[in-house]
Length: 440
Image (cartoon, rainbow, N blue to C red; front, side, top):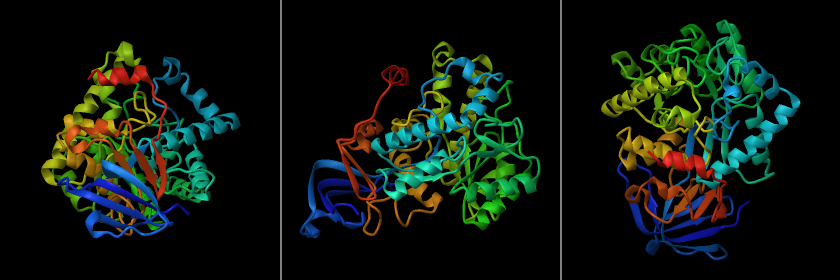
């Protein structure tokens, strides 16, 4: 149970595509953490016995939803030897050991709480070493400590030697084996499933490997059918038109990263009979590529192969965003947190990037991170907007991000997750890393 509270004298940001607001508003939250009233303060009676918080003319936005997170690292660049082909099996062996499990549990908890204190009240984790995010989710739901809503995937599902393997993936070579891995993940408590449909940037060993199709369509179809039977949507790492088309035909619900689209892809995004809800959505993650493209490799520590793949995939992601905008395809928001230069407190940068580089209006970028993400995750009845009957997932800001820019999220005045209030939340920042990101 939470302490009932009144948040008074705020402007409510709806999170819709148009950027609608309610000026001089009041929000009332009950002991169950539910919003009982939200609207013009003149029309709302203050209930007795509530904690009173004067918003002082600030701006209340829906809690952010990060639909593509990783939680195993903090976003600081890794030493070069840690990402080498020779070291990958040693790293995987440690991550899957008991000391590695303890370390990952601690990191995951820290990173989840960092996201919460930066305004993220819902996280979908898409690629864990094992089931550390499940354990953290369970601790939060038991009430061991305050945390956001977490939807963990456990290890992603990949081909042997494919993207994410062996560190954060289970590998299969047949549809039956892949379907069993879905069942195993769900039995372990996961509530999300992710496929590596194509090669990726950070573990590419050849120029052009990122985006190369890896998992056969029939194998992905077995994964989707098994997950959908349990009511679970499936995400696919896909960075080429060929890989995206295969994944969508198989029934994938969200395409992560994306690429330029053809007529078949556009049609499948809008009407996908094999997806769980009849359509699919795009979740670009510009933070994962932009620093690798914009910063000198001496700064990022990446080799020429990774840099070339990053440049290629960055252009493909921009093309995918343009096509999605042109054809009315749902766009969500995910950060790819934990990857190099993608911290857990910089979710605001993804909204800023899709606005400045991807062409979304600020209102659309906030919509992607709130209402759209809630809808595509199937949780729009409980979160994603500030409305009576929904959970009190809120971020209160000193400035209006739709006018002043998304850096307004950098230091929230208040964060509430399911009605639990954190006033003046703090996060640990990496000044050197932030200065590099600020440079572009």
